[in-house]
Image (cartoon, rainbow, N blue to C red; front, side, top):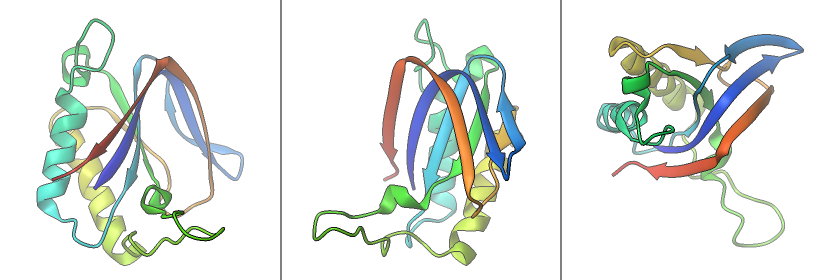
Length: 142
């Protein structure tokens, strides 16, 4: 799994003009990409990292601050544009593989008490955020 974590002061995600997820205080927007070899081990690892990394202000974690996380599926994180003028998405897992893992990640965060807002898997989404920092971190699971 691959995730881009953005520390934010607020964020929304909308589908067709309707807001489906919102963070109104400090939190993390997690853009999450899933590849073919990902499974429960990667879900557990990424959920723990999102909750426990000391990336919030004052070197605190999401868990310590009881901060919210907005999780948005983002297959384009596995895009490859090294050749030609069109990226390839072949490293991204298909929806039937990645959607259950996306749901499992959200559930894993929630099972540890994290408040989770979600995008809509596979939808065309408009994500708006106010980056706190700016602060952006790329994570790749082992």
